[in-house]
Length: 158
Image (cartoon, rainbow, N blue to C red; front, side):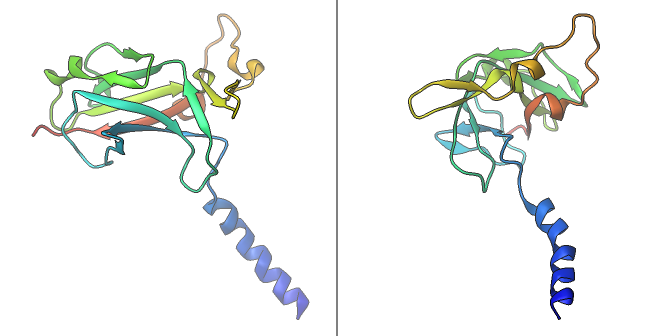
């Protein structure tokens, strides 16, 4: 009987591992009036707040970012140059005259630009220094998801 019980636990263990979230990786959120913007198609706001937060189901943790790249994307290609946002309040007005229904707003923050904030206010880089460095002249072939955190927000005209 104990062998049957252990065998059933072993079969369920991989499912439990896959159901857990990776709490080492935060997520980026776009907020308007303190509320996260929905993942469904919305009209582009003139201003929004960027926040790096722990994934759902992970313990509370404060994060700070140095800068985020905000891009208006159409058919997988940028419409305008990347907008570099260096504070949580993002002014998205430069995109208002150019976006169309079906476009996406892409927010990307490289792991090397994210730090955890301790209770005393000290910052600890999310990515160890040895992992953040690249060799000069070496092509970085990693996928975008392994380089940082992204948010894709579908857009529609009102």
